[in-house]
Length: 134
Image 1 (tube, rainbow, N blue to C red):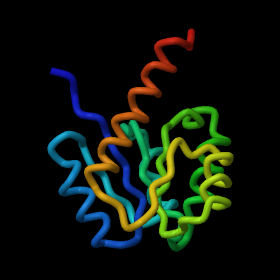
Image 2 (image 1 turned 90 degrees about the horizontal axis):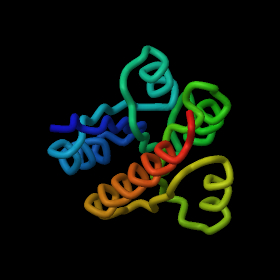
Image 3 (image 1 turned 120 degrees about the vertical axis):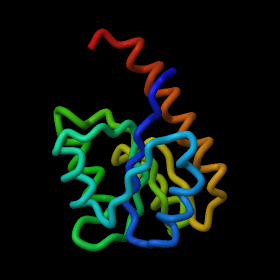
Image 4 (image 1 turned 90 degrees about the vertical axis):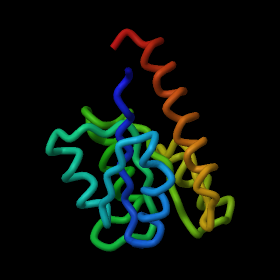
């Protein structure tokens, strides 16, 4: 049996963390952190992470800085990231996709749709890794 994917959620809203944990817990190992600094620290400590769900507006390190930090890292630059945000305007979505987000979900969201998007991004990441020589 294949081990579960590790999903790291960086989100300062406890209700959203709880909803996502409940929705994802049967299919994924779910880790939650309250901001980008906690999320980056978790990753840098060597804990397994297959994909990140990140809010944009968080204290201490927001979603934009989280993406910039990870995309500039030689170790973590390919780690898939899905942004969760109340910003629904096209310009913000485009900015985050250009920064390196793999997908963007507008709040409020259907947690089952988020789960489907996680699986889709992970499939693409696995296909990309299988096709590369690294």
